[in-house]
Image (cartoon, rainbow, N blue to C red; front, side, top):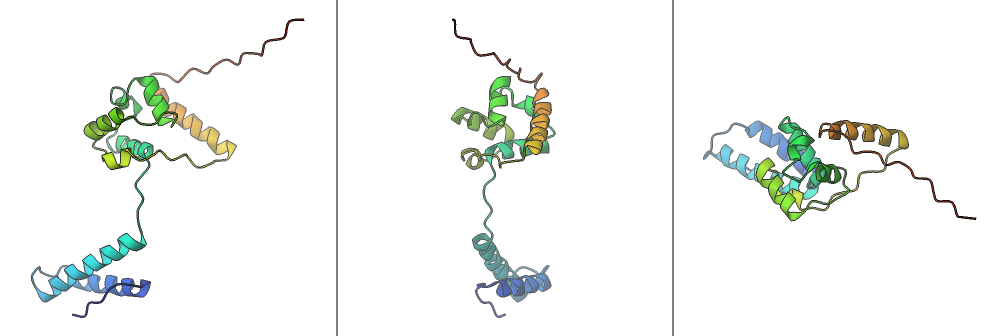
Length: 160
């Protein structure tokens, strides 16, 4: 059993190959001990070289709703009323501490994820932005209607 630190990609690949051959070794045996040490070293290397960012709070909410087979309507009462859900899911309003607590307790979303600042969505072409807006309106329509579009009011004319 020759165990060395994993410092390079080649060391990492060699450790993965050795783990594969040792997989299923009984605990407490020399092969089982070697497997435990190699897995620990590999995990440390992966944490350092391939960090995973915490997800965006809104994306985490969407994911949890999808996992549970729910939609935005199920957020009414958790986040607030229909308009508040609309504002939060459209990123027009940040999550409050009370909303974070409710989402954590009722949807089991980790609080560490919810307290992060919301990321601004990536810039999109006008065509894809329209498609995303239509999809968002469709989803938000399940809340019992879409937000009304405001009429454009013509500017006042100056009196002569």
